[in-house]
Image (tube, rainbow, N blue to C red; front, side):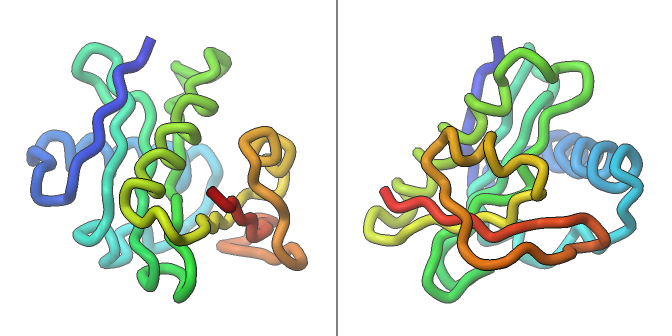
Length: 149
């Protein structure tokens, strides 16, 4: 079972920062074969959710305040579970924790995500609904989805 902790950027240790960037790169860049600018300047403004297996980061998500990614929405992004920890429902736990942190950040705003298209039903199961047409993001089909608390 993973232990989830949430931290502001300044609360992250240097090792945690290294490890979360390593996990994001391992999955999004290497596993998904997607070259993109992961370090986008938004991390300092985010809430970072670490899913810890003992002291190792096995899952991660980033919650950004309204106006950072979307003008009218809080956003959850960079959701990732390490390959070795998949199939144990940790992704569901991570989304629930992301919603919880987004609501803490701004109880009045809806939440928006840019979901990989093959995960629409996964996010639907957490109350997200499609918002508009699909699009390519870094060569991968995505769709915007929103959640109203």
